[in-house]
Image (tube, rainbow over all chains, first blue to last red; front, side, top):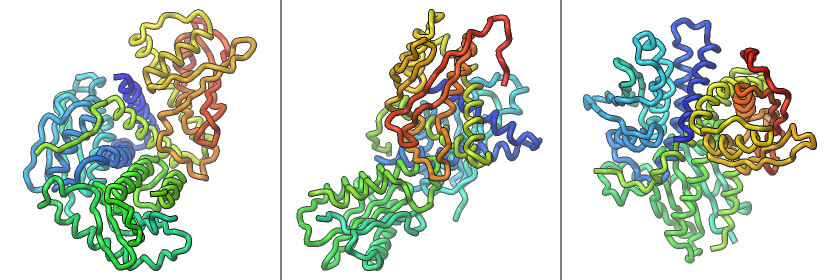
Length: 157
Length: 141
Length: 180
């Protein structure tokens, strides 16, 4: 798809920028949270657009299904491969071939960089959910590239 | 002639994001009416879990008829509420027209949300939104 | 149980919204990080440059465009192939200088600024300046040094968006390109 390469270049460049702007930070914590916040705002805007013509959501699970199907398809052109929940406010979304990890080599030495490549997307999900009235904390982990799990912890208000 | 007498937009926590009323009317006059209708909106939102698919439309219909005015409501999936007050004597307005006015508002609000310089939850100061509302208020029906 | 949706299945369009909003998030982040618009403009150009020097590879591979004979051909390829491929728009090429070393790209619409309304305190922000950097970086990789700048911008009240490009010189192949 035409725009996708451009988006990936932009995404990489944003990571480079934030990383160098926060170079004093050895733990990458600030870098990751800055990227996450940018994703959050983008997620809010996207969800506002994507839900313009959909009926109102029934409940939290209905919202999560929307994120896994419609939202993921619009953004990453595939659905989440597996959604699991403990029914107590924790959801695990698994993407077996996560697009933004595709260009990172599969080698183990690159695993350290993975959090930076996932932070923006964690923010996307958190922002999307937040806009739909679901407050959460979203983290991601990679075990074998390019498969990736996003864990959503719902914050009860 | 004005089609809409006033239009309010509220954030999910129910404080106002945008208020506009026709020049001859004071905003205060509708304060009570609009806020009472917000309660009706909240009630409709809270029962959504039990509602059938066709009752989960974003357009909430007539909320609160008074002798002089009719109040209509709409809620986005992000729980932003739009409330429109029209004159009861204006009988030519059909439900579908009200619905399409809300759609226009919602579309324009979506663009506001996608403006990177807008902070969600802040009062709406968009010129595009303003002019869309202006045009809608005087639209001939 | 499936959610009824009449949304278009044109995923390409959705992607461009993701791109537009992500770019917006970058610009507003830079506005927070830097003191004034001028520095933001500079940073956007620099980031664009970094993207351009990588993008050209992708472009040459996918477009199978060969070496351009002259600057006029380059202009056409940029407008009709590159802009079309990456942003889905085809700017017109106009306002050639008599010497043929300078032209304008007129953008009827600019996907980067969909939804954007500039706040009053950013009146000197060149919102889409990344594009200038992309063009400069990409052309440098094919041995062309160019000067790229926004001459008009609808965001700032102009009727059209105009990118002005000036050919400076041909870069000798054996010299390493400037690294930024």
